[in-house]
Length: 142
Image (cartoon, rainbow, N blue to C red; front, side, top):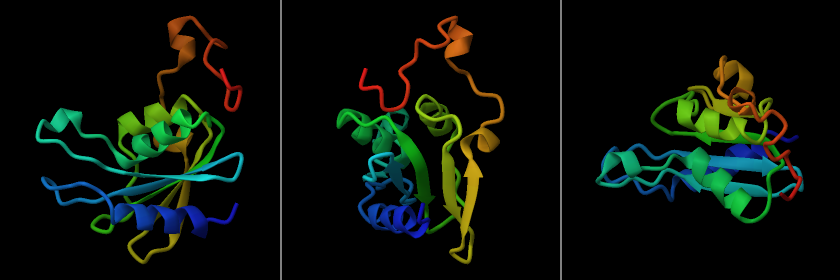
């Protein structure tokens, strides 16, 4: 995987974030098994709890297009580096690939790659529901 492609796509996406309250734009780019890159931005709402993060926006776009084989996600925020996904986004992405590489940038713009497992050490998964194996596998089209 070429790290620069999703990082550039995340940077590009961040410019389109809707952040009238925090003024903290975040961009994400999700690389999928078929080679596509789905961009996402954070979209704020006056009712703060309805705000959606860039990572989940990208994931929802991919799933809505029938793509569940997530290979890597890049997350970029100009005002904070590195800017890891929040716990909700990590948990959301875990559903599709527990070993997902997460690409961040340090303050100098150099890539930092961490695994989703490393960032979310004790996740909640299908096994906790007693339905291990019932969750859709990446790319199964279910």
